[in-house]
Structure formats: structure tokens, C-alpha cells
Image 1 (cartoon, rainbow, N blue to C red):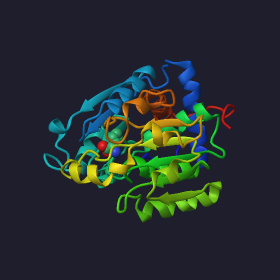
Image 2 (image 1 turned 135 degrees about the vertical axis):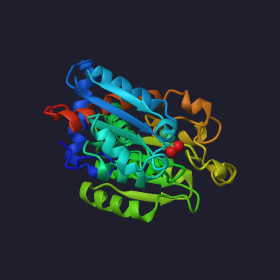
Image 3 (image 1 turned 60 degrees about the horizontal axis):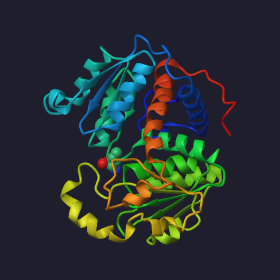
Image 4 (image 1 turned 90 degrees about the horizontal axis):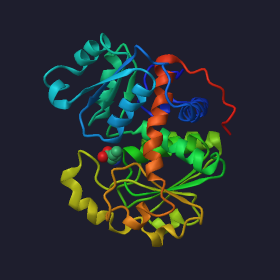
Length: 314
Ligand code: NVA
């Protein structure tokens, strides 16, 4: 089991948790359906739109024999119609786990404080830890482990980048990031990542030049330039990130066997071109499928207690 009741951040995990969860996700992916979480109910409490997370949480719970209820922002009015603390207290009486997607990370922390059941971060402005875990599963499958790998992240220092730098450095993956001035990952996250890198032996490198980041990389990763909640900055961001598109010319600087990753949804023609998204190096749809497999492992860990071996983890 995780050391914390909740999964709000990659920092809630240890390297050992990551090994166990990947091992479990690989095993459950091969196994398919089971009834391990029968009589368990998950609430999805979302303030923002979602395709992958809503669908993959629902499918994950069904494949494990459990059930899901979806609560839309309009129905709940978290923090407006009713306090976050009271929403947490009420739901704790009905369900066994809450997965929440919020604008502010503070909302998740408040939910966690008052909830008697585990709370999972299904994306906040600060982190997207379930995504990073699905990404690690995809990298593990594609690259047969993590040792010696270099991941180049091109673009905004957002929620996805924050979780990814923490996850990569915890697992010994070298992390390079290229972003325009003012859009890098913030110092508080970098400081944690530096500690993880010191423990795992990985390196961290920041640059303004995408070519410096991508040259010789094993993994090239990007995300949207404008995240949900930042729509008013879209034009300013389009200008700032103009030279940061992942196109075939940039990707050609990576290793020949490099993979291209994106958490989706992609803004095709902005941060990534169609030929890269749909090209032979792209693993973006494997990433989205792996989210469901990783969520099964996380739900099992938080709700049922995983007791699976680590034989196939390297
Ligand atoms: N950074 C993006 C991720 C979407 C899954 C956002 O927050 O909108």
C-alpha cells in the first residue's frame, strides 16, 4: 500500500511503490477482467472536461468488478453550492474512493483533509500524477526498463511536466527540458526533482533550445501550450512557444529508436505536427490505453492492497 492515504502527487510515492505499481499494471494488463474490487464504488468528481480519465477510470473499475459514479461540476458546485469539506464528508459516507479533477491543487488538498476515503488526483493545476504513472508504464514496456534513458520534454512547465520530472528522476531517467523564458518548471518542483535525481543517479538539464534537449534523446514528450483554465492566455502562449513545435525535423535529432509521447488531447499543428502524431515513433495511443491499466493498479493498491510479485520489473 502507498504510505499516504491519497495519491495527489508523484511525491506520495517511493521508487519501490513505482516498481510495485508497474509490475501490477503489467500483470493486470495481461490478465484483463477480475472481481477484486467487487462491492467497491469510486466517485469521479470533475471540475474540468475529461475524455481519457473519465473513460479509463470507469472502465478500470468495471474491469475490476467495481462501480463508478460521475459527478459533474454543475451538479456539485464544489466550494460554491457546498463547502469542499462538506462534499468530502458526504461522499466519504457513500463511496470507497474519490478521483477528482480540479482547477486548484488546494481543492484536492482540502478534499483529502476531510475525506475518510482515498482521494486520487485526476489532474490539478499543479500535477497530473496518474498520467506520469501511465507514461512510466509505457516507457517501461517500450524500452524494457528505465536505466540510462533520456527524456526530452519540449514546451510548457505545466502540471504534466511537473509530474513527469518527478517521476522520471525518481526512476533514474535523465530529464531534459526546453522551454521559453518564464515557462520552465518552477523551482519548488525542480528542488524536489534534484533530490530524486541525486538518489537515482539521473541528471536534469534545462535549455531554451529544443534541439539541445532532443539531440540523442530516447523519448521526446510534449503537451499543449495552453492548459485548461489558461484559455485567456492562448494567443500570448502561441507566440511564446512558436519555436517549440515537435515536428519531424526536430524529432530526427533524437535517437533513431526514440519514441514520441503526448498525454493528449493534442492541439495538432501547434505543439506537434500530424506526421509526428501519426508517425511510426508515436506511442500516444498506447499511452492513453495504459492509463486504464495503470489506474487499475493504483485503485487496487489504494482500495484492495496489492500483493503482487515484482518478478517482471527491472
Ligand atoms: N496540461 C493539460 C493536460 C490535459 C490532460 C491541461 O491541464 O489542460
